[in-house]
Image (cartoon, rainbow, N blue to C red; front, side, top):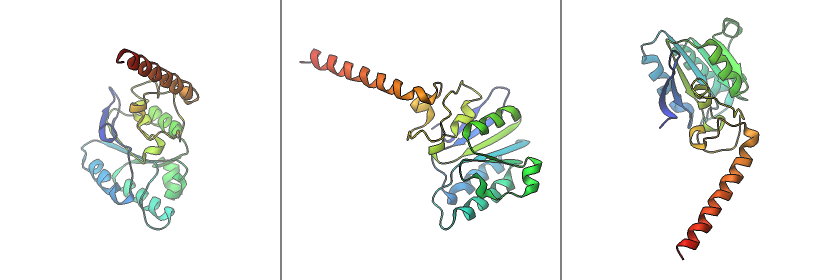
Length: 190
């Protein structure tokens, strides 16, 4: 599956490990270990929403940041909880840590700073659709809605190449088409 530790290789660009179905705190270590074992000169972690933790969110995000920092040269937290990583001023100033409030800003940052010799782990719960960060380097992504409400991947939805504002119109046309085919089929089978 594309977004269950799927590999996306960008020609003359980075390689992505895309794991964007769920991000329970207790399993982040497995993804970080996979990144740590990779034999590549540069590693980054992009982390979205974390789930299934006990206690305060701040504690979970701080732990996730410490663990990601131990295996990567750069860590990017995306979303409304990005500030909870509590990265030091030194990490902010050196570029070791980035706090992005939108997926599009994270994608723009990756696009502007990509390297052909790097591995980028993208990990997060499916609600942010972080897979668009990797897709944006191989396809024309036009949908940048951070919380679109779709409970499927961007590849399965198939509308990543269309601005989010037009998705409703497209879905309505698809529904009319399905209804037309059902009526046609019911007439021919009667």
